[in-house]
Image (tube, rainbow, N blue to C red; front, side, top):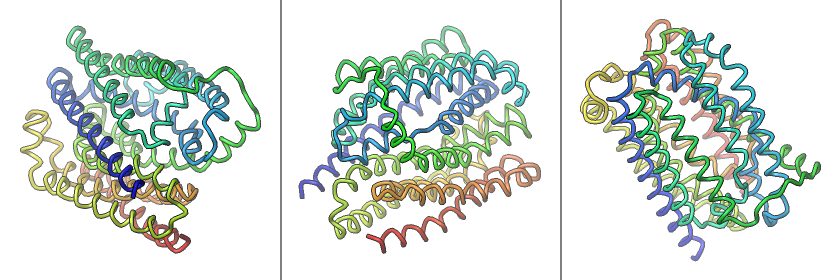
Length: 407
């Protein structure tokens, strides 16, 4: 009974944060959409794509490992911190020195400065105390709420201030840098244990070996969520990338917020209850019904009243995204439900299942994205993403049944 109460309490706190986060994000987008152009958003989308790609390629799975392990954080925190610092430095250097080549690939020379500026972010993230994951590990989601809410507000204030003053998209990057610095300071002042520069080779091997499937999943999931952006930017141009990126945010992100809430809370919860087979199954059913009850209405609103929502939040210059918005709303429900159940796979250490599911979706996207986009433009890109999500959903159902049988 206490575990259920802790789970419900965690869902409440994380749910409240995701509401706060998404409301602030919509306010931020609504303001910036009137201050910046689709081309500006396209430049930032390119920088964000590259940063996310490099972070996924070098993913070590440290957070998943620390939650899965029953041992105290003190045993691994020093090595985890050193690994994180090295990873952040590698990403930063790659982004800085290859900025010109990346900008030329997308035919956007204006992106060079932004790519080099945003390369500061992964370098800083490497210094965050890994022990900050203890809030999730110990189901202390009230503390997680206060921390993440503070970071979001810091990002918002700095971002809008810089954009107002400069009229430039660099404000989005300065917001990221500010929130990251806040997180570093918080993680060392309020979180124990505090890491030191000590490296254990065997521990590093254990972390990286356990995280290899997390790395593969992270990379395939990134490509599934961003390959369409790359193709749109390359084939249709930067302005269309700005349109498409905005449609993706409006359609998928609100629905994925629900899945994020349940996934964040259920992962450590499943780990703690994995000896109680019946409780795991009952909890999965409740999670599934809750996710569908919350995401399907959001999808229907986006599908039947897209123009009204676009007019309210973005303005008339963004109405071109209406057709693709409806397609991506359906994709959002499928992807959101799959994501909400990944926590069960991770809890029973079946990261390979997650990777295969994600790869199947990527395969469907790869086979269709170029011909669909060339023939139908933004709408074609949307249909390609939907095709990939349907394929991954079929594979997901197969592995979900398999896991339940194993339990």
